[in-house]
Length: 148
Image (cartoon, rainbow, N blue to C red):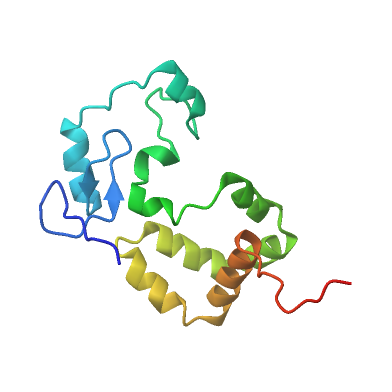
């Protein structure tokens, strides 16, 4: 079970997000805005570190490595598997459904994403979408197959 981080701004809410510049934890959009006003960017890593980092160069833009903590790393999906999502015809077909697209937009814009995700996991269309994504990034292992 993960330890709950407190918000670095208000000290109250459980910090679900991290600043892409300094990795400070925060819990909401208002706390993010307040933090952003006084945030000092992280130091520039040496050139050899920048060459090995994922994502865009450290020119003020963020990378995945900037927002993931060690405890989040176990949930990270490798970039090559994420690319498979974009190549999936099955997933593209599901995303043609305007109701599914609206559900995804609502989650993206919500402050309480986890509770909304739990609610949407009761919707068959959303479950089908989630299952499709999981089959792509974590294909089921072949069990009980005898070699020929």
